[in-house]
Length: 220
Image 1 (cartoon, one colour):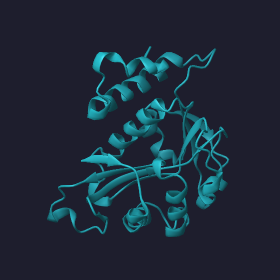
Image 2 (cartoon, rainbow, N blue to C red):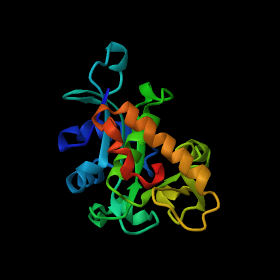
Image 3 (cartoon, one colour):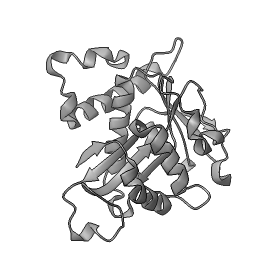
Image 4 (cartoon, rainbow, N blue to C red):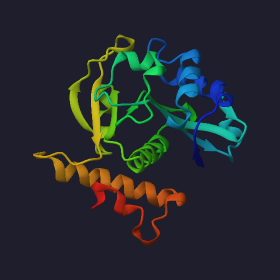
């Protein structure tokens, strides 16, 4: 499997998985997905299986270069908290923004519970660290809080977002040290562990001579 960014050619497959992963009130429709791809294609991470076999073909998520397994997407912004407007308005994206927002973590049903979303999330964390952003923010359902805490995200309580008329919890992963943070050591150890694992999984970031590792404050 490999990871790449999105183009409009991927739209049908992305929309199929989005519809399968979220109820209608929460799923981004094809027009919103298209607007996001046009505005911030480099902030779509697609996990693609180029060797999908016949057993995987039951789900309509085919791409020119394989089967779409999972994808993560979201804008960057200087706003520190995720809002409902971000789901609707792609033009709120600021390429120089400090925070990577995540608006969706989707995995095709036939690939769920195989670690695909975790693999892709580690890549997003790594890329966000390389971009020297402050961190990542997302909103999740209560049942997924433990999953995201496993990457170093901290639960900040109920989100101000009521996207899809649902209850969400805001999760934040910081990539820059904060003064007087009592939970600093444990949280940053978890984040550092995920960055190291992502580097091991991604050959393009092989740390020859430790030149890459040294740029992450979390790894110093």
